[in-house]
Length: 209
Ligand code: GAR
Image 1 (cartoon, rainbow, N blue to C red):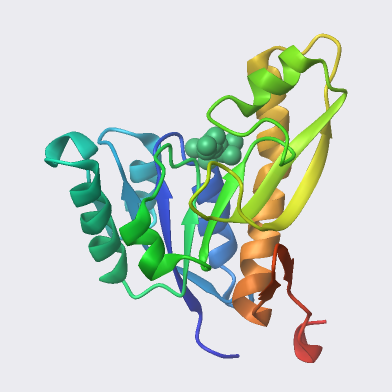
Image 2 (cartoon, helix red, strand yellow):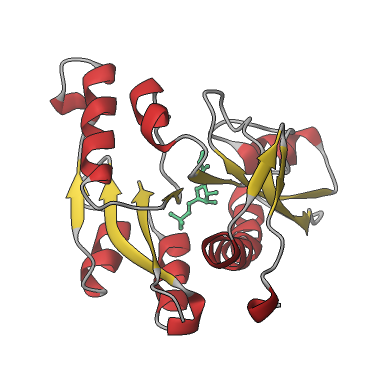
């Protein structure tokens, strides 16, 4: 068994995706270690989950910086201090900027609660429901400079039910999203991955096949 891959997770809210990763990391065979959890706001369950797991946390609020660019540089510095191989945005409700992507582009993952390229932005479940689609889902992708536009690592489909509300649909998506996130963060960490244009592949290593 090689050393676990260090990952920094960024959160803004309830942190159920973070919790799923933390739980998976309890198994050494998973091959991932959450080195730190960062947030853009105080007082969220995501930070409490990290603290309960004994993981270091940090908070960087955009409003504490003169400019968005200064916040972005500070975020990159704080993440870099934990030397992650991968960064996971798990319900992080801020766009990372050029300074962050200059250091962590190509190895920052984000989960989006819709099937990209449909319904990008902050309201994926609401927009899918309003559009009347019968299938939506969640997408794991490598962050680029766009909004939910980066190369797709994995997707999971979720049915939309006739009596769904935005909340019931989002909760059903999140259940599938957590499984996808845990599976693919583990695979990318253990097996590596490559990108060819927009196509991301992660061939399984023999010993983990
Ligand atoms: C997840 O559904 C995630 O995809 C979404 O927020 C939720 C976070 O849940 N992220 C975005 O919409 C990012 N634009 P959690 O805090 O319980 O993990």
